[in-house]
Image (cartoon, rainbow, N blue to C red; front, side, top):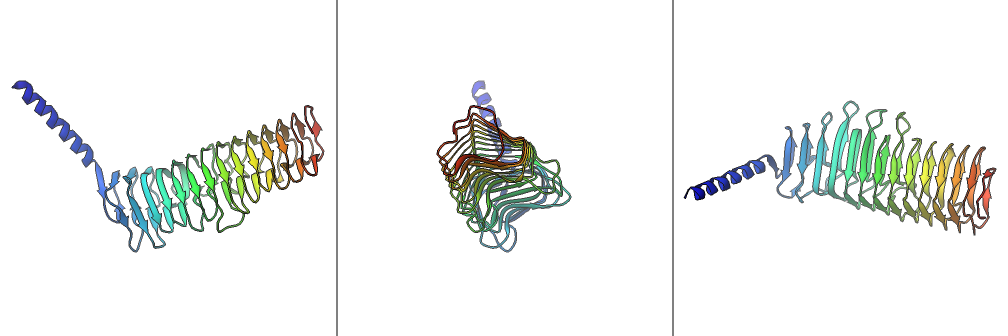
Length: 359
């Protein structure tokens, strides 16, 4: 009898503990302004009204969409984080329509944000963050966005920010897919990007760089797949130095597969094919290393870099419409490259032949 009573007490205690855990998650079931820290959970699908559907005006907020959908046909933000609030997590659900899926704008207070396993559709921009400190976009899917960038993030004023952009799928964006202005020591890995720049010419699959963030750079861009646009560019390194661009696959781009416009980058193990120019520079760049890339069947040059003291090592650049490697400037060298079957020739420009090249 005592054992039975004890067992009942244990079961009752477990039930109370579970109830308290459930009660700790605050239900959201209609358009809401969140003003207190806490863990919130969407308990039903929500259709918006005249303003932003969810507004977050508190620090330390986790919003679990719980597999539900927030939608709005009006030009509003589905989830707007108010100026000055930070340490926000949004995960596990769907956002459909609106002008912006998740938005934030500030010139004074940096945002720490994590977005994980959220599906976006039909927004002009899925994620638009102006004033970031740390941003992580993880395992999200963005499809059918409107005329804006699918994901646009920039730092606070002229400052850089850091973050991770991992394992996302982005399709049919109107402009660029990942526009990351001023990223520093960030990681961009495992993303699949297709058919971007639907309403904008010369859009970018992945873009890093800012004209104002002086301490940007040192990013890793690896294992991404980018394909299928009309007149756009796959990966753009714009003014931000000392990045690693490693083992990406870029194909079917109407402009450059990979475009470098900064110094001191290492571009290694990438595959570019069927682009206008495989791996190219914009303007004069120096002390970049391009090694073990496979560049073939591009309309113009396989590799074209302007500037001084660049190294081209162990690349395969074949079957391109102009040169295998085309350079200008002084002090550059090439070695151990395979540069066959390019329409105009193997090499253009004054470089040191360091040996081992097959022309």
